[in-house]
Image (cartoon, rainbow, N blue to C red; front, side):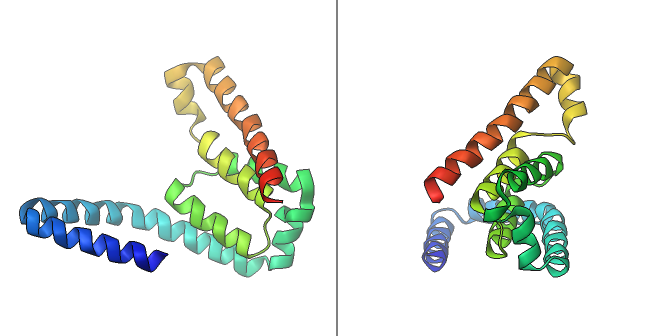
Length: 158
């Protein structure tokens, strides 16, 4: 599947190049600049996950956030997701690595949902713009909703 997407992308890039070389080169330069901006974050998280995977063997990961960890593992995953600040393009490969090393689907669903919807780290900024009551309410509802998402994933996947 990935190979097919690469072929399609290369084909469309060549087509774009023949249609308008100037715009294509400008787009490639913008893409490279965006990649350069993203790369340090991406590498940092990948290295961190790599270190964690080296320290914690699959049995430990499975015990903490595996299928059999139950709601405690889901809670741990949800809390870690809520306090972690990782961009989405890094979160999904991280989730894949955790799944490959013994994490459960419900636990990863709670992690990703709370990671994307809850912002403990960004709460002060949110309070500044939306007010304390609104920011806390939004984050609380999002946190609870992440467990609902985990439950739905558990029904669909298991």
